[in-house]
Length: 148
Image (cartoon, rainbow, N blue to C red; front, top):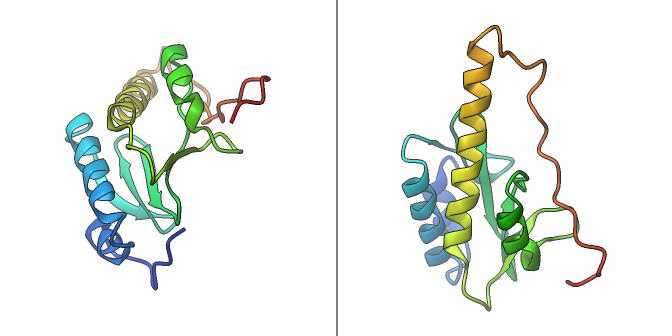
C-alpha cells in the first residue's frame, strides 16, 4: 500500500496523502461509488477508504502498482467473469495503475453489494424471513486454467 503516514480521518485526507499519480483515480472511484450508492456513508476502516450502507459496500486503497478493491462480491456470474482478469491471490481485486481503471465494473460491484445488503437488512427486519447469520463475503475463486 502507498505509505499513508498516519491513520487518515476521512477519505479526503486519504486521497491527499496518496501518491500524486493515484489521486485522480481514487477521486474518480469515490465519485463512481457515490453515484451507485448515494446514501452510503463514507468512512476509513482498516486504514482504507470504505463505504457503508447496511454493512460495508466496498473498500479501496492505493498501492504502489495498483488500486485494490475489497471485498469480492459473489452472486452475479457475469460480473464474476468480467472481474476474472483482476483477481488477486485471495479473491481481492487489483486494478493496475498502468491500465485504464474499469470504473463501470466498480459501479456494478457496488450496485450488487448494495442490493445484497438491502436484501439482508430487509430479511433481518422481518421475523418470518429472518436469516440466522449474515452470509459471509466469500472470495471469488480463480479458474483452474491458472490464467493471471
